[in-house]
Image (cartoon, rainbow, N blue to C red; front, side, top):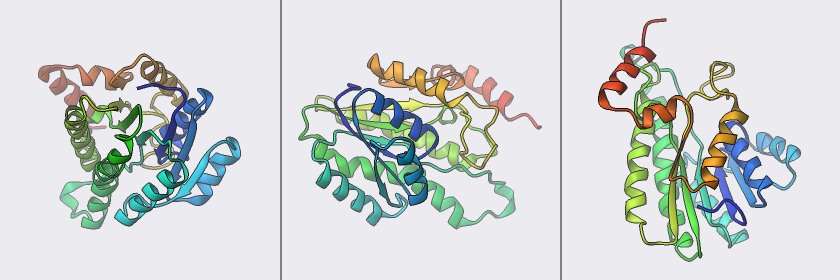
Length: 245
């Protein structure tokens, strides 16, 4: 994908990885739209970068996704990049009768929403000279962290979907890119839970350089290791990651 002269929509773009990518797209001369559930957070992001265009919506709601499509393509007809970044992570003890609503919400936001948004935007993207769909998955797509079982499963499924999407769109103007983060120092899952993770700017700078080089899969740190590991290596990684603490 090209990294300049685009019109880019980033879901969950007000903070964390989404905002870090938004900054880099802005710095490269792109028009950037971000969306999220909380208008106050979107306004905070725009206060830091006034060039941002913001739209409050809940991607867990199919009508919210449809509204996002109509706002984005109606106001920005040159839109040609979708970054499916919005996601939630929950620590779930599977033997403790977890709430089905909580499980369903994680499935919807992390998997249903990016699949649906991709299908909604593809017809518009096929009319563009060059377009891209960027799905943010995780190193946990390949070796799950057992304490976040639903999150790990949704990211594995999104990785699988990304491969199929790329295959189906081969030969069209739409490229399909996967960004594969390791643990990154953001507030995913709760404030302070990922302080051990990679610094956000270090991660985003590496991913940005890979995108500029045309990578179809842009990974960093442990996630890069996991994405290329053999089954034996993944088994070893799983045991290491999931030792009692």
